[in-house]
Image (cartoon, rainbow, N blue to C red; front, side):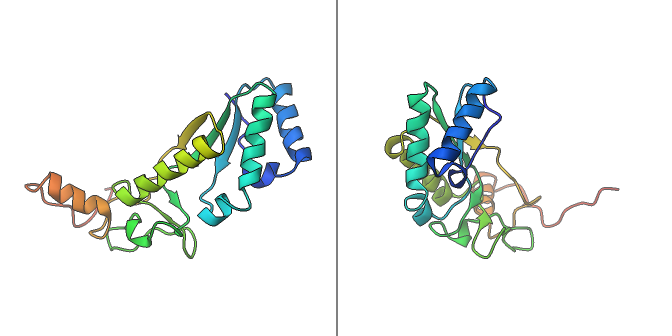
Length: 169
């Protein structure tokens, strides 16, 4: 495996890329590991594109497979709207920036976007593997605006959806 995950901005020039791969070889890791940190799509296919592609080329040149890590619920909010967020029981979305949020596990739009990202990284940028970072369930009980609620009441119509959270006593 590899203890050296890196983002495209950290290996955007040949010197920093060479340093990354020199360290990879020196420490005996066997997979070149890059990451997608919920960048806006225009940045992904714009300013970061060359960095990702050159990273893959260098990995392959040195005989390593190239892996891309995608955060499984962290959304920039530019291609998938806030309606697909994880919502707390009081129906406030869990946001990490002005436009960024944590996507609902039940959001089909988010799943479709993850598939689009996977296709881009594998087919267009040449990555050999995709790893989805651990999912972050940011809310204890999803609110009624969360896509999870819709799915729950459809799947379990005879079970009352929780309206509050019991305290730990």
